[in-house]
Amino acid sequence: MQRFIIVRAFQAVATLWILSVVVFASVHLTGDPALYLLGPETTDETYAQMKKNLGLDRPLIIQYLSFANDVIHGDFGISTYSGRSARDILFERFPATLQLAGAAFVLSLLLGIPLGILSAVKRDTVFDNAAKLFAVIGISAPPFWIAIMLVLLFGGILGWLPTFGRGGISHFILPVSVLAWAGMAGYVRLARSAMLEVLDSDYVKFARVKGLRENSVIWKHALRNALIPMLTFAGLTLAGLLNGSIAVEVVFAWPGLGRLMLQGITSRDFPIIQATVLAAGFFYIFTSLVVDILYAYVNPRIRFE
Image (cartoon, rainbow, N blue to C red):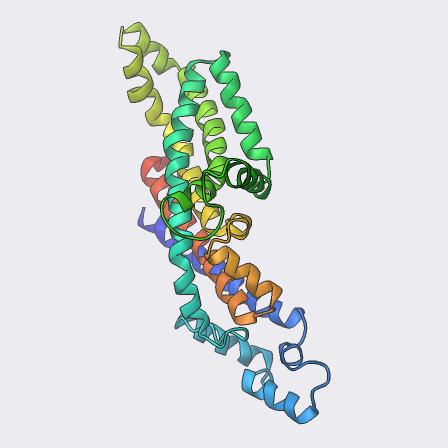
């Protein structure tokens, strides 16, 4: 088990390093940052001074090593748009995204898994067909379209809920529902297929022959083995919610990392872009590492010998 954790941790560090190289290279591939900040009509002296201030007059390898050292120490530079530290802005916006993603994650778990289990137990019934339709719509419908429709219905036509900003509990209802829908749809499909496979296994049939109560067979024996694939999906869902809330945050004017990333892209604020992309990559890689370790504890067969 120790070797498995070490190998997975090494792979995570290597992936983070590759991500840092890609983020660093993207700044140079999109054009000259100094020229963009000064404009095409700048003088040669001003342009040379700006390149020196940004460290762009040094060799690329030296620039990357300096960039990597700063990132390790949590220094992403100064935002060219606001003039503030990119790290401070990142820390200000992160709690909003964490609250939104955390609430959507819990909601998708509490509703998606039971719906999937009941759909498998009531196979080929009206409830099963309705659950499958719900899952298909949730997976295929774009989140931004669902968000716009909910804004028009509950904010414009009915006027029941606020549609923008971060405030009380009522401000969470619409964005959390949109984010959780896709996760719930995935859990419904995964829980249903996993439970159907387990319910057809020999040991479940034997438990029924022994006369065990149906609730005990489903919730104690079948569910325990069906939860293994859901564990992996849960970790990836959480990482996806943290990183994939851009459209939802923009539609609902939610002051989180997704909206910050879009603002950085539209204003070509390179420190903000680098900070948000690296933070998103770190969340995803770290979550995947934790899921791999937990999965190894649940299912020892995947560990390295």
